[in-house]
Amino acid sequence: MDSYPSAPGDTLIFENDRVRVWSMTLAPGGMFDFHQHHHDHFVLWPDAGRAQGQEAGDADWSLSQVAQPGYVMYRAVGATGLPAHRIRNLEDHTVTHYIVELIGEPLRSSEPLPPVTNGRGHLVRAEGEES
Image 1 (cartoon, rainbow, N blue to C red):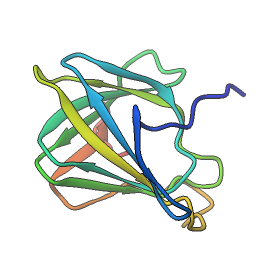
Image 2: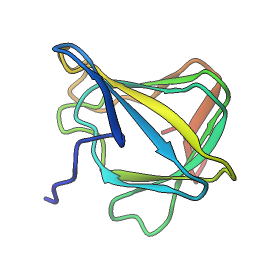
Image 3: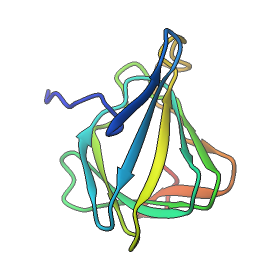
Image 4: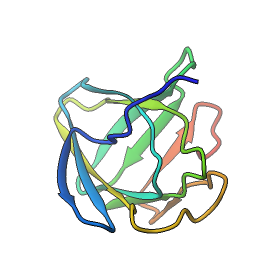
């Protein structure tokens, strides 16, 4: 099995024994390379943005994320973590979002669960199913 970095952002901005907060800033067309989530987490987009994701081993960028201002998504990753993936910015301007890992909490589920959002955006696969 391949090993991927577990840092879900480019800058660690806060950490204690319960949470770890990362920012991910992507220039227009910029990409954050393959990484894997091993902790249940929240993703917060303070501003609107569009991105694509590609899971390791997939030929296509089959994940599409659209965020309106204030978009929040919660992910329960399961015991093995989410599949490794990378993300790229589709906007013509720089976008930043934040990832809050719940490192001091037990995993919510042994299997990855579908994302839960506040309805201000979505993450879908190319086939149209929410991921």
